[in-house]
Amino acid sequence: MSFLSLLPVLGLALLPQGPAGPTGTYPALEPGRIRPDLAFLADDFLEGRDTGMPGEAVAARFLEARFRRLGLEALPGGFLRPFPAAPLELAPEPEVALYLEDEEVFVPPRDLVPHPSSPPGSVEAEVVVAGFGLSLPEYEYDDFELVDLEGRIALILRWEPEADRRDSRFAGRRLLPEALLRNKVRACQERGALAVLVADPPGLAERPDAPGILYWPNHSKAYRRMMALAASQLDPAELARSNFKVEEIGDHYFCPLQASAPLGSRIPVAYISQGVLEAVFRRAGKDLLGWMARLQRSGVSQSFASGVRASLDIAFREPRRSGRNVAGILRGPADDPLSREFVVVGAHYDHVGSNEDGAIWNGADDNASGTAALLALAESFVRSRTRPRRSLLFVAFSGEERGLLGSAWFLNDPELPVDRIVAMVNLDMVGRALAGRLQVLGTRSSPILPRLVRDASQGLGLSLDFEAEETFDRSDHASFYAQGIPVVFFSTGMHPDYHRPTDTWDKIDFDATSRVCILARRLIQSLATLDRRLPFEDGYHRQTPVYGIDPRLRVPFDVRYVDRLDY
Picture 1 (cartoon, rainbow, N blue to C red):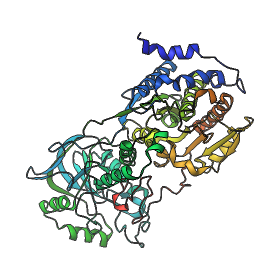
Picture 2: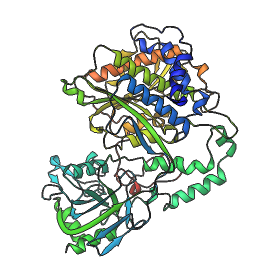
Picture 3: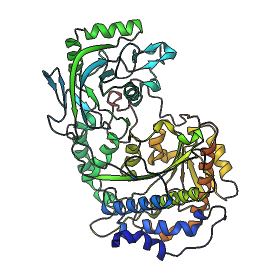
Picture 4: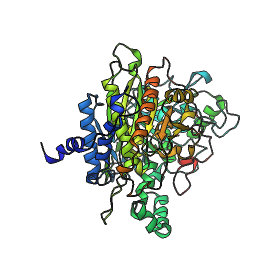
C-alpha cells in the first residue's frame, strides 16, 4: 500500500470524533461521524480540489474507496465517470466530415457541426429523411410511421411544423416537449438509427451555414470577442480574490455552453447546413421547397427513404483537462418493480484550488460539507435494516465551480437511465447554519415537495426558508431540473468566507450539518417509497421555450433562439 493510499485512512483515524448528534436514530449522521470526512476533504493536502488537478484526483479516489467499502454498486464502466473540464475542440479534417455517395464532401465549420454532447464515431449508411423527428399521436402526426430507421442515418429538422405561427395546430409558437432535440434523438435511436443529422427547416433558416458553430471555440466569433472583452475589462485583483484567471474565463463560459443540452446519445449527432440538406434532396430526386410546402400545407408527415448513402465521421481532440464524477448505486429490493427507478442524492466535491503564492481555497463549507453529508447519508442507508423501494444513486460531482459541468456531463452519460430518475436531492454548503436557518430551493418543481420537506423537518429545530430562490441556477440540481426532474436543494446560505481561503473546517457547525442530514435522509426515504413518482412542474419557468424568443443563459453575450442546442 502506497503512502497516498493510506491518507484517507489516516485522516479518519487521527481526527477527533466529537459529541453525539441530536438523535441516536441514525448513527452515521452524528456530528462526530461527519467531522473526519469533512476535515480530510478540506485539508491543505488536497490543494483546494480544483477540477482536473491532483487534489481533485485524490478526493475522487477517496470517495471511490468509500463507495466500494460501503458496498455500493458502480455504473457500467466503474465508479469514476470522467468528463471534459476544458472546452472540447473538433479534430482536424478529414476526421470530421460528411460524404454523400463518396463524391461530395462537407466539413466544419460551414456545412457540418457536431453537437458538443455527441459521441465520436464513424457511420456509413443510407439517409432517411424523417421529417421533424416527431411522433405525436394526439395530433395525428407521426414522422416515423412510414419509414424504417433500422441501420440508417436519420435526417431530421429542428423545432416543429409551423413553429413560427401563433395558430399552429400544435401549441402555437410554444414548443412541445417532444420537440426537444434529446427527445428526437432518443426516438431515432430507439428505432435503430445509426446517426442523426439535424438541419434548420427550409424557409425558417436565417443562414445557410450549419447551426451550432457558436459552441466551438476554435470557430466561434463570440468566443474571440468575449476573450478580448475579458482581457480589457475584468479586474485582475477581484479575480485573484476568487482564484480565477483571465485566461480561464473562456473555459468558464464555454464549457457550460457546450454541456448545456446533454443528449445522452449513443449515436453520433451533427448539424448540417442548408447546402447539405439541398444536396440530399437533389440526389434523391426531390424538390426541397416543394416537399416542405406539402408538409406545412397538409399537416401530414412527408418522411421518405432517400436512397442516398452517406458516410459520417466525428472526432474530437483530447480535452486539455478532465474532471471525475464519482457515482454509486444502492439497489432497492429486487422483487419490487420500483427498484428500477432512482432517487439521485448529489453533492459537488470540487472547489477552486490554490494559487502560485501558496494560498489554498479549501472550501470546507463549499462543498466539503455537502460531500461529507453525502457519505454519511450513503452509510446510513447501507446500514439500515430495510432498503428503500427505489434505488438510490449517490453522486459526488466535480466541475460545479466551473459551471455545473460534472452534473451536466453526468446526464449525458448513455449508461445513466435518465428517464428512470424520479427526483434529485442536492446538498451544497450545509455547514454554516445561522440560528438554524436552512434554505430549501427547488420545491416548486413538484406540487407535493413543500409538504414532504416540512414533514421531514419535524423536531429538528431548523428554520426553513423556501423563498431564497436567487441561487436556484447555481448548483448541480439545476442540471436535473433542466431534464424535467423534480429537485430539492439544501443550503445554509452565503457567508463572508464564501470563495475565500478562510472557508476552513474549524468554522463548520457540525451539529447543524447533522440535523440537515437527518432532514435529507427523511426526505429521501419518502421520495424512495412513494407509490407513484413525483409529477414534475415547471415552477421556475425554464421549460417553456417559445419559438423566436432568445434563451436566458449565464454568458456575457447574447445567444439567439436559432443557436439553442436543446431544440
